[in-house]
Length: 430
Image (tube, rainbow, N blue to C red; front, side, top):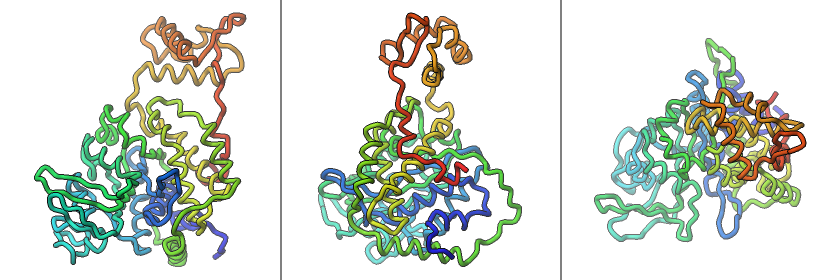
């Protein structure tokens, strides 16, 4: 087998005779590698550090094989020696106890409670359980990988408290590096350098059940990458076991990453220039539901750069890493509105989005009559378009061209996703 093959190449070869869409397999591998790295590889960011852990959710209609993609990545990672997996169903309190490794924790591999310091759970997620006021810990970072193909089974329905806590742990990097929590019974825990990775699966209906509309502006969603997939069209009646040689190659590549990729990531000048250009020119996603995501988009990109760089068995981010990472993220962002479906949308927001899309694509000013044809299905009354156009004009997004008696966007946005993006690098695009 060629040594020039990337980890993506090998993984896609391993999963070629499976039914999940390629984009599911790609993000499952990305998230798994981020979990494998944990805190041993980081990107310096001011006086903080960014780590490659990610929160990713595969979304699609039933039958798109989300579970298959997630379980395949988890199985490969487990075969490579990684074993800090979360329980499939839990509560906020139980999750923290398991992460802390206290005597009250439950080891999902054993199917029973474990008893403190000498337990297998403590070996994996070791820390000292604290009573009131105690602040001891053993200096071992805690990490866990949530692989929940039925995400709602893991987090529950509408559990904003749990989601808020997970959001806080996404980029935990406080001065003390210790997450402290006091339960209602006054028991306290202290978790040193918690690192959480999440790879979940959901349908549109399940997503709406897990995240009530009040959660749109909630921090967890801004930290979540939504990966929309459609059925691949492959129908495999009798799946075959992947070639053992490919499995061995995967293990070897993952072991190299775990053993070799450590410490602070450096970057080439070209990579720095590309990242600076992307940060300065990238425009927020037009869909207003992703406003909070857009504020963290660059952080998502840096985390992805870490993973892509590590996949080359390198600790130095180069221009090819930035190009691939930005292409993967941009391609995925194109499907994010489909991932949400009608979640959190109002009729006016749909009409506004469609109006701006038409104006961005036009080569001449569009009259009110022409614009109404674009949005007539989204409005209850024809005179509503006047209010929409007035609001867009006052917001500085459109302008009236008197000579043509029509509207144009005030400043046509740069197609920033065409900057340092090559979709033809992606198998999904072919």
